[in-house]
Image (cartoon, rainbow, N blue to C red; front, top):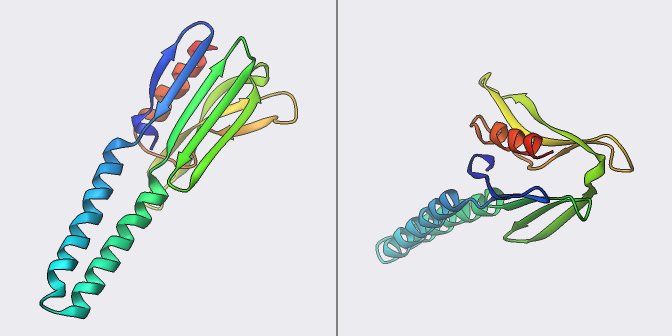
Amino acid sequence: MVWSMKVTRNTPDQLIIDDIPWLIGIFLIVFTLIFVTIGLFLLSEVLLFGLAFGLIGGGVGFGAFTAFVRRVQLILNRPLDSITIRTRSLFGYCEVRHDLSSLSRAVLETTTSSKGATLYRPTLMLDKGMSAGAHPIVTSYTNTGGPRRMVDAINRWL
């Protein structure tokens, strides 16, 4: 959810950008709890309907939570010559590292939605080494201004 990304440290030696999707996480937890609660109340009236309502609604909420709630942290560190992209979700932690000296710029990758809207995501362009090529910071695209702000912050820092 790139629209909530913000710069948490910006010094000549280090740039840290964090995305902690609090709003969507809280919304999905409340959504899940509402369906499970209603399902529990319906158990006393119509057993199968209450059970199905709670399990299906709770399952959809839980599935959406696991799919969409990911903490992403980008760390650019000059003294260590490193780029670190950390991703944490309900099911695990992933850390990808590259050499900062290979980074030429950040760009906006674009795609078009099924409704014709243009969607964006921030991507790092590495020109050298074994990691040469485009490296998206996040997997999802969005139509908000977050990716542009992130790309601008990275390019200004470079």
